[in-house]
Amino acid sequence: MRNRAWWILACLLMAAQASAQSADQLLNELSLFGSARFISMQVQMDLTLANGTKSRTLDVFIRRERVRTRGLSHVVSPGFLSSMKFLSLHEGGQESSWIKTSDGVRRLTDANGSERIFDSDFRAEDFMTVSVSRFSFAFLPDASIDGLPCIVIEARPRDAAGYARKLFYIGKADLSLRGMDYLDSQGQLLRRYRMTASQSLAGSTAPLTAEMVDLRAGTSTTLKVLKADVETPLPDSLFSRGTL
Image (cartoon, rainbow, N blue to C red; front, side, top):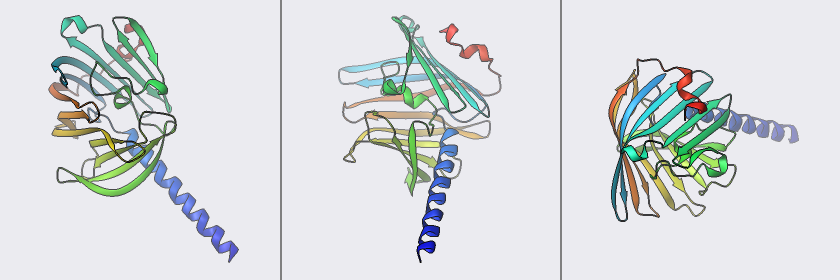
């Protein structure tokens, strides 16, 4: 009887480990801007604040390879914000990221992954790869986002992150990132991301428009892709800290 109990426990542990690994692999392929190998986009970012609205235009570049992903976002308009950049490098499970403002360049850590990007409702971690080194994962029952069936993965941060857990909604038909919910320890929704309109790029689904809402602050940020190029290769030198 005892041997049978140990066998059942071992099977459960192996199943849990396999699920976590599958979740990690699935999330590792996700990005706010799609899964093409090379992505060059111009994106309009509109901020709705408590006291009015603001708008920025961004250039976004992503280079994705089998074991590493690199991303650079740069404010190009208005001109007085053109020094603002965000660089993220993911390789071999390790993440490095830097933010540039008029005050200079700073390296970000897991502790400041919740830092706002370009004064918006998006945080640094929203632009970064999701890795098992920073989260533990679990599959939840499937759900629907705007009528689309989605796989749901719960990610719990291993360190303090300003929220207790994050839910990823991944389209079952195309494995695109359809939504994210950030919840506190009481299950209250803190922030919510949704892809509100999509387009096909290089055979994969990418956002045409998207929105992030901060329910505590009563603010929101919308993204609209103005143009996209997934054919032109992007050199490694574009994603160098020395170019910030």
